[in-house]
Image (cartoon, rainbow, N blue to C red; front, side):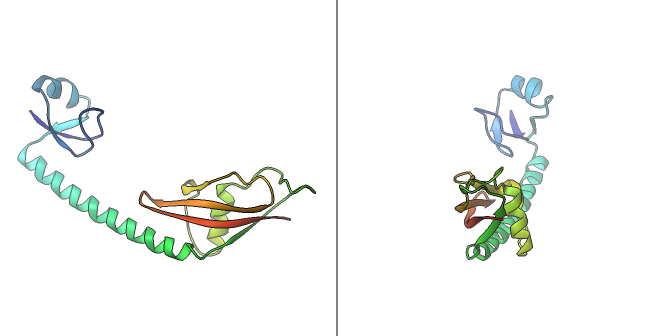
Amino acid sequence: MEVILKQDIKQLGEKDDIVNVKPGYGRNYLIPQGFAILATPSAKKVLAENIKQAQFKQDKIKKDATELAGKLESIKLTIGAKAGESGKIFGKVNSIQIAEALKTQGYDVDRRRITFETEPKTVGEYIANLNLHKEVKVQIPFEVVAE
């Protein structure tokens, strides 16, 4: 029995794969649970069209991310934070502050896509990693200064 998977299933396949399963497994588990649909000729045509459209969208998103990464490579940010005499800052610099600093320079980046190699807890220079796309990553240097 051929089915089209609607989501990833461990040891069976990934989303949008057409797999052969035993009829009982497909009829009694996969289809009722909403994990798969029957692989009829019309469902296969719909799947092919959906894959084609999804690929087009992914290519556009990747192209936009690559352009943004090219622009962001030359940027250096300065983040102000309250710090003690020893240079240790009160609290820490987080991804929200980096996203706001990028926004003031005209770049809109989601804060959830920003990570740090080392957490900025003292005054100094650090690197923020931006995951713009699963294949496009860029590193932005930034400096934490005392206010």
